[in-house]
Length: 492
Image 1 (cartoon, one colour):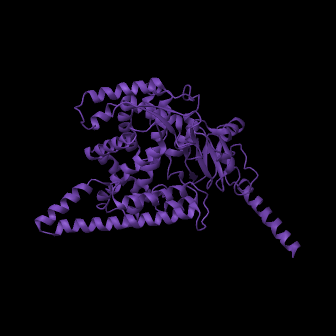
Image 2 (cartoon, helix red, strand yellow; image 1 turned 45 degrees about the vertical axis):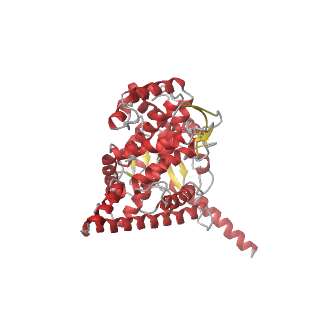
Image 3 (cartoon, one colour; image 1 turned 90 degrees about the vertical axis):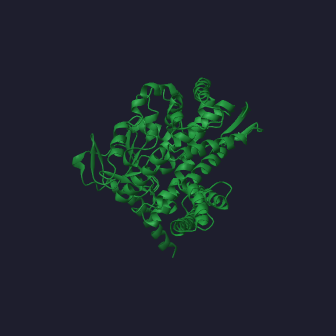
C-alpha cells in the first residue's frame, strides 16, 4: 500500500513538472521567431508568481522586474498565474498590445477574479459585450462630468470631510479618502445619501467585497474570498431592489393623474433623475443582469482607484513644498474670482492646469495600475520575438513610467515635467489607466474629484507625512500605515 502511494505521488509530481514545461516543447510556429529569453521557475503551476507578486514600493519596479530586465532584457518569458507568460517592460510592445485588443490580444484575468467580479463585469468580458458596456460607460461619463449637480455634490462632500478634521491633529487619510469617494460614487450611481439605511448596508457588503477581491482565492466558507462572493450576491440583490422601486415610482409618475401625488413623486424623481441608474434604466442595449453588474463596476472604480489616487497626490505633495505652494496660488486665484461660498463649476476645473500636472505626476510616479492581463489570440511576431497563441501577456505599465530613457529623473516627483510633455499624456509614455479600447472610461471623473478636493484642502490645511508610510504595490497599491497625516488647520 505504501509503495503504491509513493508511485502515485511520484507520478503526480512528475506530471506537474512535465505539464509546467510542456509549452516550451510544442511551439508550432518557430518560423516566426524565437521565444524571448527568460525562466519558468521551478515551482509547477506557480512558476515565478510568488516572486513577481513580492511587495515593493510602487515608486519602483521591484526587485523581480529589475533582476529579470537586467538579465533577459525588457521582454522575457516566465510562468505566472498558472500560465506560460510573456512579460513586456518595453514601451513599443506595451503600446502594440494595448492597441490590438480583440484583434491579436484579449483581456484574460485569472478565473478567481471572475468569481468575485462576476462573469459579465466590464473588467473581464471581451468582444461585443465589452464594447456595449464600455459605450454606455463613456456616454454616462460624458454627460455627467460637467453637470452642476455632480460638481456641487463633490464639493459638498469635500467640505463635510474637511469640516470633520477641524479639531483633529492627526487623521488616517486612506480611510478619509475612501469615505469621500464612496459617498460621491454611491450618490452618483444610485442616488443614495450617507444617511439612508440602504447606504450603510451596501457599504458593509462592499467592504467585504473589497477585502475578498485582494485575498487568496480559496472558496471555503468563512474565507475572505468566499465572503466576497456572497457579498457581491447581496449587493446585486440590493441593486435589483433599488431598480424595482425606481421603476415602480417612475410608472406611478407616468400613469397617475393626481396632481398632489405626481408633485411629490416628481420631487423624488428630480432628486434621483441625474444618477447613473436612472439613465441605465432607459438603455435598451443592456440586459437586467448587465445593468446590475455595471453598477457594481462603477462603484468599484469610483471607490478604490480614486481614493488611492487622492492618497498618492496628498502623499507626494506633502514632500514637495514648492508643488504645494504653486497649488495654493492656483486655487487661491480661482477662489478669488468667485463670490463667497459660490460653488466650483466646470470652467473653474478647466483652469486647474497645475493641479492636472500634479495628478499626472502622481499617476506616473505612484503607479496605481502596475500591469494588465492579456492573452495572445494567435501566434504573433514582434520584432524578433515569438508570442505564442494562448500564452498570457503582461504589459508592465510601471516600467515605462519609471524608465530613465523615457522620463528624465523618473524617480523624482516633478509635476513641472508635464508642462512640456502634455502631448504625451495619451501616448506611449503615459498609460496610468491602461490603453486602447480598455482604457478606464471613468478616469476624468476621478480627476475632477481629486482636483475639487485639493482646491479646499490646500487653502485650509498644511500637513506632513511619516517617512515610513509609503505606497506599496502588492500588486494593488496600499499605504503601509494607511497614510497618517499630521494636520495644521488654518480656518475653514
